[in-house]
Image 1 (cartoon, rainbow, N blue to C red):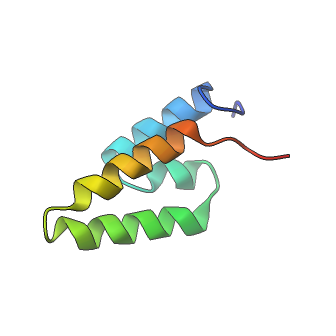
Image 2: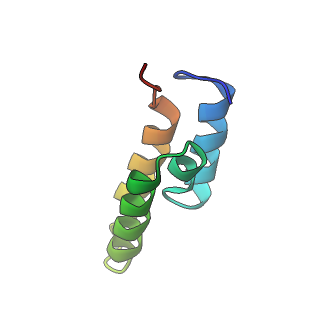
Length: 68
Protein backbone atom coordinates (compact mmCIF):
# COMPACT_ATOMS: atom_id res chain seq x y z
CA UNK A 1 0.00 0.00 0.00
CA UNK A 2 1.20 3.53 -0.69
CA UNK A 3 2.36 5.61 2.24
CA UNK A 4 1.45 9.11 3.30
CA UNK A 5 -1.48 11.44 3.37
CA UNK A 6 -3.51 11.47 0.18
CA UNK A 7 -2.07 8.17 -1.03
CA UNK A 8 -4.31 5.61 -2.67
CA UNK A 9 -3.98 3.43 0.42
CA UNK A 10 -5.40 6.19 2.59
CA UNK A 11 -8.24 6.79 0.16
CA UNK A 12 -9.16 3.11 0.29
CA UNK A 13 -8.92 3.15 4.09
CA UNK A 14 -11.15 6.24 4.27
CA UNK A 15 -13.72 4.56 2.03
CA UNK A 16 -13.65 1.48 4.26
CA UNK A 17 -14.22 3.67 7.32
CA UNK A 18 -17.09 5.40 5.54
CA UNK A 19 -18.98 2.11 5.55
CA UNK A 20 -17.79 0.71 8.90
CA UNK A 21 -16.02 2.95 11.44
CA UNK A 22 -12.61 1.51 12.24
CA UNK A 23 -12.39 -0.70 9.15
CA UNK A 24 -10.00 1.73 7.45
CA UNK A 25 -7.70 1.67 10.46
CA UNK A 26 -7.84 -2.13 10.40
CA UNK A 27 -6.83 -2.08 6.72
CA UNK A 28 -3.89 0.15 7.69
CA UNK A 29 -2.84 -2.35 10.37
CA UNK A 30 -3.80 -0.14 13.35
CA UNK A 31 -5.74 -2.71 15.36
CA UNK A 32 -6.17 -0.89 18.69
CA UNK A 33 -7.58 2.35 17.24
CA UNK A 34 -9.78 0.29 14.89
CA UNK A 35 -11.37 -1.50 17.84
CA UNK A 36 -11.74 1.77 19.81
CA UNK A 37 -13.49 3.53 16.93
CA UNK A 38 -15.75 0.58 16.15
CA UNK A 39 -16.84 0.17 19.78
CA UNK A 40 -17.34 3.91 20.36
CA UNK A 41 -19.36 4.24 17.16
CA UNK A 42 -21.53 1.25 18.10
CA UNK A 43 -22.17 2.64 21.59
CA UNK A 44 -22.84 6.18 20.43
CA UNK A 45 -25.19 5.16 17.60
CA UNK A 46 -27.53 4.03 20.36
CA UNK A 47 -28.02 7.71 21.30
CA UNK A 48 -27.67 9.04 17.72
CA UNK A 49 -24.18 10.50 18.21
CA UNK A 50 -22.35 7.75 16.37
CA UNK A 51 -21.93 10.02 13.37
CA UNK A 52 -19.28 11.93 15.36
CA UNK A 53 -17.08 8.83 15.66
CA UNK A 54 -17.95 7.85 12.10
CA UNK A 55 -16.60 11.16 10.74
CA UNK A 56 -13.54 10.94 13.02
CA UNK A 57 -12.83 7.45 11.70
CA UNK A 58 -13.03 8.57 8.06
CA UNK A 59 -10.78 11.61 8.61
CA UNK A 60 -8.29 9.64 10.71
CA UNK A 61 -7.92 7.01 7.98
CA UNK A 62 -7.60 9.62 5.23
CA UNK A 63 -5.05 11.82 6.99
CA UNK A 64 -2.90 9.15 8.71
CA UNK A 65 0.84 9.14 7.99
CA UNK A 66 3.11 6.21 8.71
CA UNK A 67 6.00 7.30 10.92
CA UNK A 68 9.54 6.29 10.33
